[in-house]
Image (tube, rainbow, N blue to C red; front, side, top):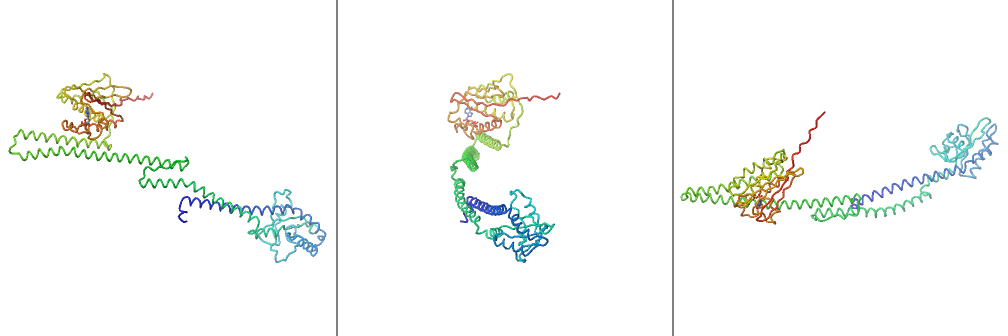
Length: 498
Ligand code: ADP
């Protein structure tokens, strides 16, 4: 039971019942109070002229002197006939002159005349009930009827009649058993029971969706990542459910990404280990041989061995440097420093650098540059690296007497850079992977050519850092074309103050 009140459902049900109870109690108090007011008002309205009518009875005994005995007698008779009234005669200041009661019971010798005057002036019964002093109590006010009377010659006074005193007293003191209270309490009890049952059912239904949400979130926490909350409305709970579903979707996507990255990392480490192991094994082998056959080896042989060792060390060095470069690009430690430059000039410099390599393979290295090519914006050093990698690859994977063409062109606000060769091409199934790390179409190729398998991954990273993309088209034994674009340098108009 106590655990029920710890739940959200239990708490709002309890608050609802508490409020119902509070409102019911206020309602009972207001009902009883207004009913009593109504009784007083009716009593005063009905008996409005009572004092006026009775005044005539007293007047004969109020001549030069007040005939106390006769008046007390009249009062006594009247009070016997109508026990609901208490009759008093007062002077103009409200001092009691005549009454019929045990003097000890009279607590007030003077009553306030303001309510009496108000009563006498009020023609409008809406002002009722007007409450006046009850001489028998010091603090309680009661309804009354009053009339002006000639107390002595030349001295006015009041006939003051307390109405329904017993009724009023009973209504107040016996309120517990009164009809008003029991009726109101009964109505309240019915409302409380039905309201309570109805409220509990409604709240149970309302909180059902929250319980469902809690269940789904707990399942998700346990690792059941496919769990989603069913959406049934667009209210606050619906919006929260929707937000959870979207969050779960994102978490799933991130986890997929993490898993993918993790497997890529494992693959990369395996590939790196492999790429490091082969040259290291060859270096070790050659050095051991040199040491073992030190005496019997001719200087020419030794030189040949040492040259092979040097090539392996150079390749290793290249691999490590490129890995380092890629990891810096990955971690955004190396960011492009964009500046305007002439891509045509840069291309000519790079082509000049690769000319000897091309000539060695009798490859025709051609550039196609339009005469008026605008400057581009980018990091010159990085672009040098991109062009060098692409041209290096093109020469490396093109047979003797082939052709490598690098053409520049412009459209809209871009400059296109295209590197094409007539080389061996890349199989279609390998095309999606060539920008991956340490990917080589044929493992044997790299051994012959010395490529690290990281060049295109670095190229892609650099192009992406320039907010651009690189695409590749290739046909086996026909050739390969790489294409990327760079932003033209736009000279922003200088504002001249006149
Ligand atoms: P590598 O250092 O091995 O050249 P890259 O990342 O530069 O590494 O290239 C990845 C692979 O893509 C290469 O091993 C090669 O198989 C293939 N490749 C790249 N450029 C060309 C090209 N122009 N022609 C044919 N194959 C290419």
